[in-house]
Amino acid sequence: MKLVVIGVHLRREDIEPLAMAVDAGDLFLSALEVPDDQPIGDRELLLRVAAKRAELLDRATFLAVRYGFTASSAADARAKCRLLVEQWRDALEAAKNRVEMTLKVAAQNPQPRPQRSDFDSGASYLKALHQSTRAASVEPAFRQAVDAAIASLAARHRWVARDNASLELVALVERQVVPEVNAAGHDLKQRFPTIPFLLSGPWPLEVFVDDHE
View 1 (cartoon, rainbow, N blue to C red):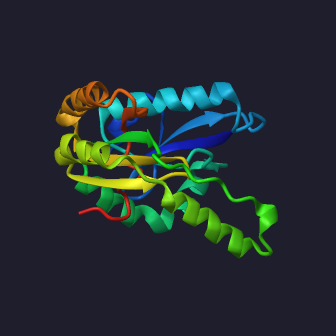
View 2 (view 1 turned 180 degrees about the horizontal axis):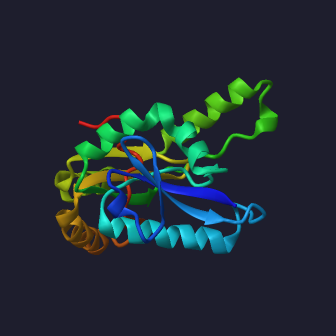
View 3 (view 1 turned 90 degrees about the vertical axis):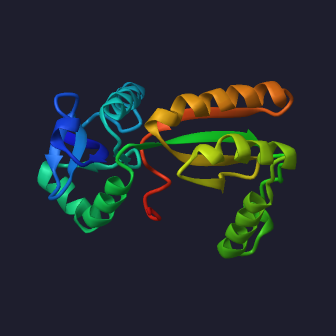
């Protein structure tokens, strides 16, 4: 059997009995125990992990780990995250009752994705790829409206260029503010019917981990 790690939590009782709790020093890891021969990309496993993430978030805020973090045992899981425990604890303590919400919007001027065959070196290609992502922008009036309606409700927020065709606002909000964020998203759809965007969440901590207050 192997462990598929889901998240990082402050308390054991925020995990059990929904998932396996692994003592990681000052923190606890939530995990699912699965057969060694079950592929990480298996659809059934992906759906199970997604469902557990939602259930765990209903209990308490936690820090999400990138999907695919596996360990052969509890001791192996502890060893793999040993150097990050202090950083994770600080982030969780600073955001005990906060969750992330995301608003993804299509870029106003999507940039063509560079073709690897057009570049002599990998470094040049990666630089061009980064520039094409950074060049994507949102219609100014819509971005201002999002900042006024949603970013204003957040303790912290950040616009992130995910790819060359879209941008994403990530907002760290208090749990009790989530209904207000959803209402703001509904209002934005009424005001900007021609701009495609998706408001989703709440999500565990992911973006606001390294730069907590």
